Image (tube, rainbow, N blue to C red; front, side, top):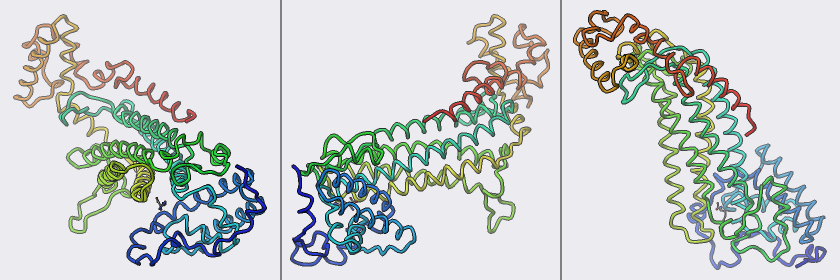
Length: 475
Ligand code: ARG
């Protein structure tokens, strides 16, 4: 269908946009207006709404659905509105419900009838779905940069500690010695997967809903591919009902965000423990801590504690969004308006958390002595002693039992393994000789785990080189 663009310059409709109220006999109650309005929070989509409208208007013009004069007026008007919003001069009105109607009304006030033609072949349903996707795409791109920056902070700290010994834990009991660099690289790996998850969800996010109109598509001869290209979408959504109604991209994003927060929360838990005087492994710089108003000796690790706390809030948003969607029949329902606040808050929380985390890590100082003392105190090299006996021909299960007896003796005598005398050790196995002290020593233990993924300082150095290459890889 071709529309005569000259004819479309005339309009018989009333000159004022009355939202959708022509159909109604009585005005909407004030309380209902307030209850249903979203402009207070969705105005942050304004830039994306305008981008989408510009692309839509140009397409309408090129397709002959509206005149090119109208397109020029719409472009001018929207650019002015963009500037007004930037300058904080735009008057937002709750009467006009949401960001879309606010902008459309002001456009019409500025340019007249051309403003009323902008909405041809479009609905707020495909409009809002497009705006949210554009916004989320740009948030995702910013998050990718911030994850990269945090990963680089982790690598810088790990590089200084490739051979710093600390206790590795299982069940929060000292298990085996590890290097602090190795421990930190575990978080690099988690964040690498987090980043991949975000980039993967971006692929599905980057489809254009516009053209779906209210739910069934439109009878105008639109060119969706043109709009997709202009807005940087990889493709158009293939089903109009799906395009306007699903918010799985928001759920996917919040799920990826929840996993990132979960990782940072675990890291925070460790920072909190390590900075407590009982551990004394690290010191978090003063700028990231606060004091107590009553206990002068206190230095509280508020930042990691808040990261741990805010994780719950992001998980809550994930649950909120899943629940929001579970009962909705196709296609668009007003319920969907509730997607924005959890989504915005998830993004804001994650953006600032990643930023502060990277800076906090750069201010951490490490007490190497406390770390290695702790590693020795917990019989962390007991497995090394068992492995030593195996290499001398004893079956692993027997070796395990022998070492258990050695540890019991050490506990009874309040000794660490490396402080026991050779003749005492020999009582447990004649196979034990002077060279046993090489494996009871922390550095010997660390160096022996010399394979890909192991904690040996040499392996940690190699892992850092590989990790740095990943940082500069094209996303
Ligand atoms: N403010 C609405 C939202 O966020 C925009 C779409 C409204 N569409 C409608 N048919 N009421 O979802």
